[in-house]
Length: 454
Ligand code: UD1
Ligand code: CA
Image (cartoon, rainbow, N blue to C red; front, side):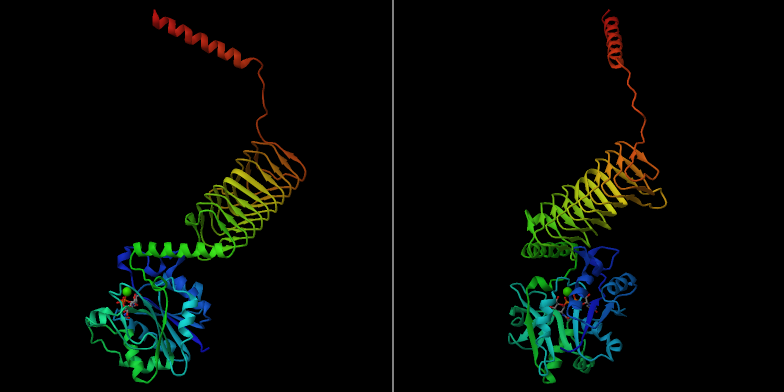
């Protein structure tokens, strides 16, 4: 196949989002809309990408470069239409030879398989192809003029005749076109239309005049749905999650109540993972085979190895690495810590900036005191350590293998292998004290009542 360059239109500020953030940086499944579009393009093997952005969009540049490192950027200061936006990339693409694929930063659910179908239509006689869809409610979209397989024009809503308005085959906006043809016909675009804009869609009519066929590939309406406000953002999020749940189950995960599980675009699940209701995956979660994730767990930036059990009510934060068969139980928070094979932290703990050796047991209420208000410090726990309940481990601190720590200890110094560490006030016993106290208090109370009654 010919080399591929993406042109992504991302100039819209998204006034209706009512946001300080550029529209294309709003997220669906933890990934920006622009990120979704570029990931789809990258999956096609695009060699280059040019982002057309609005004024002052440093954040857009940063986000795009994180997906495709050698992205080019051009600024469209004045909004003169989709054709004008694409024309801005002329200098950048002048040395390019191949196919240009025009995508939209606010049309995030576009799939690589759909784009491949579009690209597959191109050949020596078909040098342009448009991605279309059929809908019961075509209002507002450009209508495809011609046969179902090949078109000769696209008519915008405002320019359409009553008869044309009845056409329900619509333009998604996404087109693929040979680079040489694009720049040959681009100068002929005019803005003599209802909106006074340079319409990208007019390329169809101009291409047809050069005797190339313009083909159409069709997709689902939702795959090319755009986002203009936060309500539409939520509609696309819901659609994305529904598909992600189906894909997770198809790939071998059990979701007890799929509608309550939320994935990120990059969540990776192994085989035979079981996920209970109300589990949320933030970005960068990698879950190994046969892991069980119990209800109400929140997992982000964490890797969980085979056979581990997480939750209910567990929180795995970025940098949590949970070893095979380890157990992380209720109300346990793990951040930037390695939990060894078969280790357990089953109740009410915070483990941050720590290494926990294989087979160690972290008692209920154990806290790594990793932060001194300025810096973070490391807690190292060897293998097969028993940490008694309600222990505070004041980092930096090292606990040797095989150590026992007495419950309630505040550990401030390193503990050598196989030792017992105990740091708490020794217990005192006062025989009969409670009974004497009770007797004295009851007597005083009785006296008071008597004097009141008198
Ligand atoms: C466009 C298509 C229409 C199609 C519809 C699909 C044209 C002329 N019309 O119409 O056939 O059915 O999309 O949703 O192309 N943009 C810029 N710079 C500009 C103008 C637009 O970057 O100067 C970007 C917008 O931010 C947006 C996209 O291009 O992401 C589409 O622009 P918009 O004005 O929404 O086009 P529509 O009128 O919806
Ligand atoms: Ca639009």
